Length: 189
Length: 101
Image 1 (cartoon, rainbow over the protein chains, first blue to last red):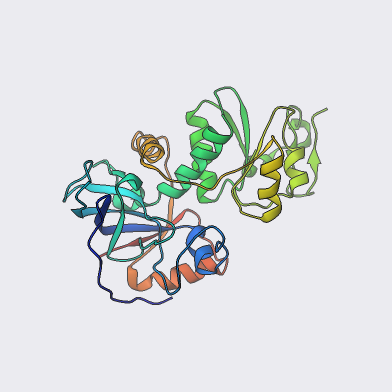
Image 2 (cartoon, rainbow over the protein chains, first blue to last red; image 1 turned 135 degrees about the vertical axis):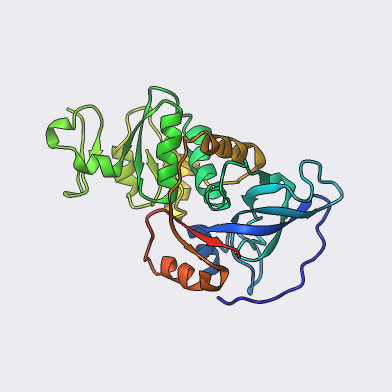
């Protein structure tokens, strides 16, 4: 990894140029760097890094309608080009939304990938509804944390692994539980 | 069951759900991805952050219902060291954020 100076192209019709205020790091970023996602992500090395960002719109492409210069935004860069780990980036209008004034740039930048991944997993794929139960494995991580809060907001009850670890055998009644100490799965009786 | 860090084997995952439950993976291994293509109870997610979903997340966070904790911050100059740490498995509690000056 190294920092380089380079000339930024003009935004295409559907793109915005953003002066970055904060960018968060996701496993995705270093998996791309290690080449682990080469079947899913295009682009030649050396390449820019970074997906999640918050910042201020500096200029917009001819077809952009939702933003104008000066807007506070939060979003992601396209996986094939990246570039959030820099002073300025280019992304598509459809990958950003306005940042609420009440939210700090740091907080906003930490949301997109973990939040959207957890939402799409629980809601789009899992069809999680109020009253249902979900076990979140890896609840300490970024996506796991987001998943716990999203599930609670939907009215589902959540069993993060941190909680399951603390449960006693007598409490293992209504759902299968994976024990971290014994590495065994306990089925309901 | 939502396996966020990919530490569960397919068998462990299957054993954790009820009859009509689903297992959702995000960690891209070949075998888990193939299972999601053939088994109804196995799903695979590769996030595509479009504005519509992102807006829901931002709204949820703005209302205080999605408090993501920030573990470590760094300037752009310090970012390479921070990314290297994460890459080497020295994880932070909460998100790692690069803050521009």
